[in-house]
Length: 183
Image 1 (cartoon, rainbow, N blue to C red):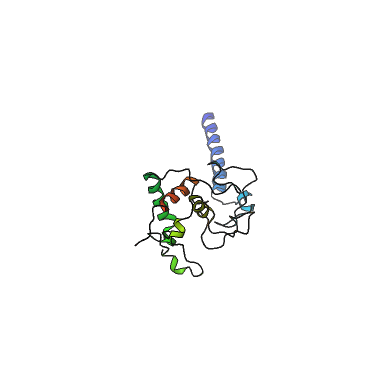
Image 2 (cartoon, rainbow, N blue to C red):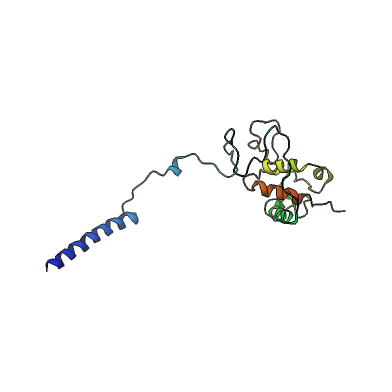
């Protein structure tokens, strides 16, 4: 009989513990905990990102150092790079520049101020790989702002440095070199 009473006391204690845990887990009594994600400053996508800390280098290495001239393409234009670039172009560039790079994508009809560039034109093809890399990285920006060029987005072409890694941007450059004007 004594063993039965002890067992009943243990089950009663367990039942009380389970009842208390279930009460808080199903929000019968709501406990409002401070969550730091709720009180910190937040940014929307592509909305004035914070400046890169001074003298910091990304994990991939420095893609571009201001004042050092245009970067040089370190990625060979082999079949694998061009294929990756074509796939990335389909995802990130096709809607504005079109299937053949003529600037006639589905979004181009809605762009009133400035139409997308014809990537097959002689003027665009004459640009250096480094110039294309900077355009893909920072978009079309205000050249008068030398402090934070990536923040002065002019609304023409968005910067893709947050969407594409350094290697992927060079792959897109290698693919763009394969585009030729339709004769």
